[in-house]
Image (tube, rainbow, N blue to C red; front, side):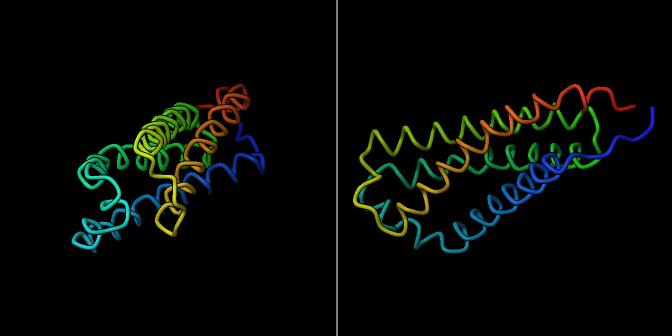
Length: 150
Protein backbone atom coordinates (compact mmCIF):
# COMPACT_ATOMS: atom_id res chain seq x y z
CA UNK A 1 0.00 0.00 0.00
CA UNK A 2 1.13 3.53 -0.64
CA UNK A 3 1.43 6.31 1.86
CA UNK A 4 -1.78 7.83 3.17
CA UNK A 5 -2.11 11.57 3.58
CA UNK A 6 -2.03 12.56 7.23
CA UNK A 7 -5.27 14.29 8.26
CA UNK A 8 -4.87 17.76 9.76
CA UNK A 9 -6.35 16.54 13.06
CA UNK A 10 -3.69 13.83 13.35
CA UNK A 11 -1.02 16.46 12.77
CA UNK A 12 -2.49 18.68 15.49
CA UNK A 13 -2.69 15.80 17.99
CA UNK A 14 0.91 14.80 17.23
CA UNK A 15 2.13 18.37 17.76
CA UNK A 16 0.17 18.72 21.01
CA UNK A 17 1.63 15.43 22.26
CA UNK A 18 5.15 16.76 21.62
CA UNK A 19 4.28 20.05 23.35
CA UNK A 20 2.87 18.11 26.32
CA UNK A 21 6.04 16.02 26.60
CA UNK A 22 8.35 19.04 26.30
CA UNK A 23 6.40 21.11 28.83
CA UNK A 24 6.41 18.17 31.25
CA UNK A 25 10.20 17.92 30.97
CA UNK A 26 10.48 21.70 31.43
CA UNK A 27 8.31 21.48 34.56
CA UNK A 28 10.77 19.05 36.13
CA UNK A 29 13.81 21.08 35.09
CA UNK A 30 12.29 24.12 36.82
CA UNK A 31 11.24 22.03 39.84
CA UNK A 32 14.70 20.60 40.43
CA UNK A 33 16.51 23.83 39.49
CA UNK A 34 14.76 25.49 42.46
CA UNK A 35 14.53 22.42 44.68
CA UNK A 36 14.91 24.36 47.93
CA UNK A 37 12.31 26.89 46.80
CA UNK A 38 9.89 24.08 45.96
CA UNK A 39 10.32 22.61 49.43
CA UNK A 40 9.20 25.97 50.86
CA UNK A 41 6.52 26.78 48.26
CA UNK A 42 2.91 27.69 49.00
CA UNK A 43 1.77 24.11 48.34
CA UNK A 44 4.50 22.68 50.59
CA UNK A 45 3.43 25.04 53.37
CA UNK A 46 -0.27 24.23 52.89
CA UNK A 47 0.18 20.44 52.93
CA UNK A 48 2.94 18.71 54.84
CA UNK A 49 3.02 15.78 52.41
CA UNK A 50 2.92 17.74 49.14
CA UNK A 51 6.67 18.04 48.57
CA UNK A 52 7.33 14.34 49.23
CA UNK A 53 4.33 13.39 47.11
CA UNK A 54 5.38 15.68 44.23
CA UNK A 55 8.84 14.12 44.21
CA UNK A 56 7.28 10.72 43.47
CA UNK A 57 6.17 11.78 39.97
CA UNK A 58 9.30 12.22 37.80
CA UNK A 59 9.50 8.57 36.70
CA UNK A 60 5.79 8.36 35.82
CA UNK A 61 5.93 11.73 34.07
CA UNK A 62 9.02 10.59 32.15
CA UNK A 63 7.13 7.48 31.00
CA UNK A 64 4.21 9.66 29.91
CA UNK A 65 6.57 11.98 28.02
CA UNK A 66 8.29 9.07 26.26
CA UNK A 67 5.03 7.48 25.11
CA UNK A 68 3.69 10.91 24.06
CA UNK A 69 6.78 11.40 21.90
CA UNK A 70 6.59 7.87 20.49
CA UNK A 71 2.89 8.32 19.78
CA UNK A 72 3.52 11.68 18.14
CA UNK A 73 6.21 10.27 15.86
CA UNK A 74 4.01 7.31 14.97
CA UNK A 75 1.07 9.58 14.19
CA UNK A 76 3.27 11.95 12.18
CA UNK A 77 4.55 9.02 10.11
CA UNK A 78 1.06 7.46 10.00
CA UNK A 79 2.32 4.16 11.40
CA UNK A 80 0.20 1.56 13.22
CA UNK A 81 2.42 1.82 16.31
CA UNK A 82 1.41 5.48 16.51
CA UNK A 83 -2.05 4.27 17.50
CA UNK A 84 -0.62 2.02 20.22
CA UNK A 85 1.64 4.63 21.78
CA UNK A 86 -1.00 7.35 21.52
CA UNK A 87 -3.51 5.19 23.39
CA UNK A 88 -0.89 4.39 26.04
CA UNK A 89 -0.06 8.11 26.30
CA UNK A 90 -3.72 9.03 26.69
CA UNK A 91 -4.10 6.50 29.48
CA UNK A 92 -0.95 7.73 31.20
CA UNK A 93 -2.17 11.33 31.01
CA UNK A 94 -5.53 10.45 32.54
CA UNK A 95 -3.94 8.37 35.30
CA UNK A 96 -1.52 11.16 36.24
CA UNK A 97 -4.30 13.74 36.14
CA UNK A 98 -6.55 11.67 38.38
CA UNK A 99 -3.74 11.08 40.89
CA UNK A 100 -3.01 14.82 40.98
CA UNK A 101 -6.64 15.93 41.19
CA UNK A 102 -7.55 13.46 43.91
CA UNK A 103 -4.56 14.48 46.05
CA UNK A 104 -5.44 18.15 45.68
CA UNK A 105 -9.12 17.53 46.46
CA UNK A 106 -8.38 15.35 49.48
CA UNK A 107 -5.98 17.93 50.88
CA UNK A 108 -7.95 21.09 50.06
CA UNK A 109 -5.19 22.44 47.83
CA UNK A 110 -7.35 23.99 45.12
CA UNK A 111 -8.26 26.87 47.46
CA UNK A 112 -7.23 29.63 47.92
CA UNK A 113 -6.35 30.15 44.28
CA UNK A 114 -2.98 31.75 43.64
CA UNK A 115 -0.36 31.35 40.90
CA UNK A 116 0.88 27.95 42.19
CA UNK A 117 -2.65 26.58 42.51
CA UNK A 118 -3.72 28.00 39.14
CA UNK A 119 -0.68 26.41 37.49
CA UNK A 120 -1.51 23.02 38.98
CA UNK A 121 -5.18 23.39 38.06
CA UNK A 122 -4.28 24.09 34.43
CA UNK A 123 -1.96 21.06 34.40
CA UNK A 124 -4.62 18.80 35.92
CA UNK A 125 -7.32 20.01 33.52
CA UNK A 126 -4.99 19.67 30.51
CA UNK A 127 -3.81 16.13 31.21
CA UNK A 128 -7.33 14.89 31.97
CA UNK A 129 -8.98 16.55 28.98
CA UNK A 130 -6.15 16.00 26.50
CA UNK A 131 -5.65 12.38 27.60
CA UNK A 132 -9.34 11.62 27.03
CA UNK A 133 -9.30 13.48 23.73
CA UNK A 134 -6.22 11.61 22.48
CA UNK A 135 -7.81 8.24 23.24
CA UNK A 136 -11.11 9.16 21.60
CA UNK A 137 -9.54 10.83 18.57
CA UNK A 138 -6.90 8.25 17.69
CA UNK A 139 -9.31 5.39 18.33
CA UNK A 140 -11.63 7.03 15.83
CA UNK A 141 -8.76 7.09 13.30
CA UNK A 142 -7.65 3.51 13.99
CA UNK A 143 -8.81 2.15 10.62
CA UNK A 144 -6.73 4.76 8.83
CA UNK A 145 -3.67 4.09 11.01
CA UNK A 146 -3.96 0.29 10.91
CA UNK A 147 -4.25 -0.06 7.13
CA UNK A 148 -0.96 1.71 6.52
CA UNK A 149 1.82 -0.60 5.37
CA UNK A 150 4.29 -1.47 8.08
